[in-house]
Image (cartoon, rainbow, N blue to C red; front, top):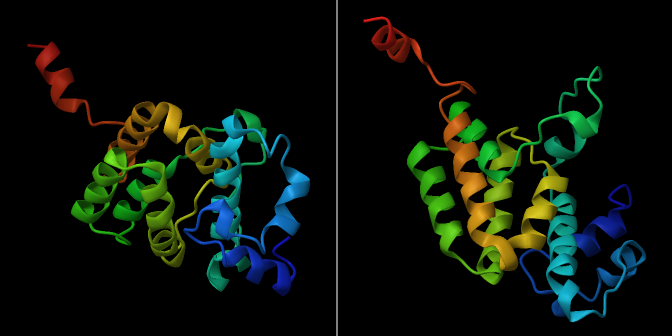
Length: 182
């Protein structure tokens, strides 16, 4: 959809807004959504609108480059990064300061869905502007589950952040090995 400037502009207008205020987006997103009148699916619908607007608002650099893909592993078997891992990579790459990223994560962990949706555009813009990718599918799933399972989603984000923020994915166990051999 974002190939069209008109569609991209309409989707971008929904940044941080509730679905009810995104009238320009309906034309593009309704064909993708089912049960859109079901109040139990409101969180899913809002997540679709939020992620679509974030994708449409990507800076030109992020639109023109594609993340590296390991074609030897099927997409469904790859480890998928959540928002916490993206923030961790941003810290490791020097795009964000560690205290800023960690504070943002801790703040989001306590916020309502409305607050998360309002704050995400600025945070995602920082990530994308620094060349850090965001896995839109994982973000979509996490946002759609936020009201039902906020603590679990926030815990995954924090765990992923701390695993990746130092630039490594495995902790240094050399001290523990030395202790075990004494």
